[in-house]
Image 1 (cartoon, rainbow, N blue to C red):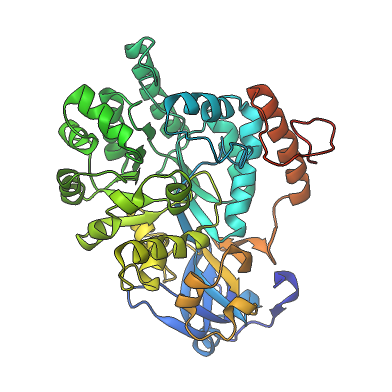
Image 2: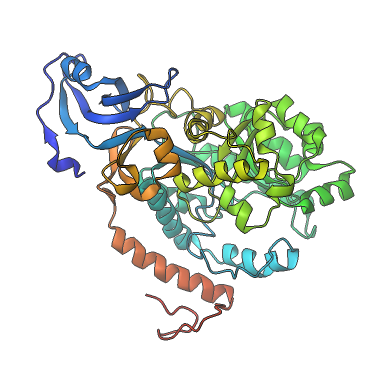
Length: 488
């Protein structure tokens, strides 16, 4: 669909106080995710001032509302905008695929050699390019909102990049408070980490309703956040009515460290600090004891599962993952893409299929539940259920038009099942945030994509050169000006 060429005459009914609303889309199959979970065949959305003012059968909506712009979206499936609960927008996008598969970065030595240099070599301009690239890729896959994973070092430049693309996000600066090796002035590290969180929230306050980008306390987690940083982050989150996000327990090394240093497991220690709660989002949580599961459920903590990262990183989900059991006990599970492919639609069947296989139970994680994880459940966990996650009157007009005229979606019989098991982000046709069409016909309405790709290629080459890491390939890569960065 190209919006500009699909506009026709509006309805004849009465709209807002001046008689006309901004936009009316009609003719689509709409998966509302509203309280009744209605699926409308030949449905319509009416939008004004960035909010949904009507959703229902096309004939009814068109008879009631008159719009400045009326768009025929026949042959489309409309869903709420998808919410990616955990993604690195810097560090990984410009160096993706660089680290050899043979590297086991569970070890500190490999982490220090292969991961940290790539992240630390980013300058402000690199993070500006990286954020734009990540935002573009997410939007083109139907993601309208995300939570950053906590490795942004130049927050202002990253936010500026996100604002260029128009995506909605919750971000924060790289926050530790304790060095990986335990060296340095720990009191100073803690003070700087807390000051950084406070400054970010002051610069990007969550209380401004028209601001798409706002700051949260986003911790690295694992064993690099001091107790004081955890407690300050939770206090900030509570005071501002926002969330707190961190990594924890993808590997047993987190558990081993906490047992060695505190005599208790990670979640037990966080509970003793008083930093668990329903505004806390913890990513990975692969290695948990019974007592840790009990604490997560009792405190209403939200868990984030990143299936591709779990598989590629060898987290031992098969042996240790308890996500289905936690969900059965009432814990809210969200999905993230971490630092790999940000196509959240690809994560849906991966997450569902993984646990069906591991538990030999086809009833686990049915399609409707998977779609809830990336829409209504995610919005609630982010404290944004009054704005996002469903297509209902009064909510923000964040939605995705999926092209149903593709082989994976024809014949269209069960749109929810087909979106989860058969489709992916390549079928996204248009993406809207606050009623603004950001992606149209699969292309950004805001930026020159080809220019961004050229910038990203150059920036990625520069990062690898500065990090002084070898490009390892089992097959020879021939040609180019440099054997380290042969592609253009």
